Every structure is written in C-alpha cells, then in structure tokens.
Image (cartoon, rainbow, N blue to C red; front, side, top):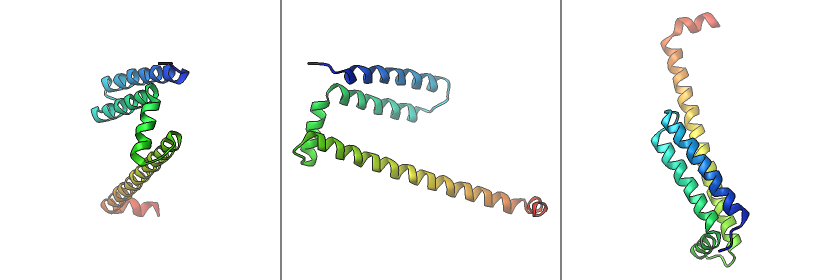
Length: 117
C-alpha cells in the first residue's frame, strides 16, 4: 500500500486533537459526551484518510454513483447542509431561551425597569 502525504498528516493531526480533548476532559472543560463525539469523528476521519478508495467506493455503491469522486462530493455536501441546519436550530433555540429569561427578569423586577425609562 502506497501512502500519500495526507495519509500521514491527518493521523498525526488527529493524535494532537485526541491529546487536547483528553486534556480538556481531565481538566473538566468538556464533558464525556463531547469527548466521545469528537474522538469518534476524528477516528472516522483517520479511517477515511487511511483507506480513501474503499470508503469512496462504498459511498458510490450505496448512493448509486458511477464515479467515486462525485459520490464523495455529494455525500460531503449533504453532511455540510445537515450540520448547518443543526447549528441554525441550536442558535434559534438559544435565542428563544435568552428571550424567555430576559422577559422573566423584566416581569420579576418591574421597579428596576421603571427607573431605566
């Protein structure tokens, strides 16, 4: 098996990510769920980097593409749109929670709000 440059760089980069994530977990700066999610994601990236031909053929056969490159591009675009939609929904949810908290504070403290007007 002939290794290309990205097949060496990506696993090394992932090792740095693993180390930093475990350090953050140890210092209680991130939770267990976040650590497992990040490690799983980077393990998947390493697997795809080490065996790109296999994964591109699998993706192409699942979605019915004749060309492996097109399959990877469309699959990646689909993932990007999905993640973008999830982030949009999270931001909307946070905006709603922030609005609810501000309303509750305004209702609970009417005297303080009267002085500001």
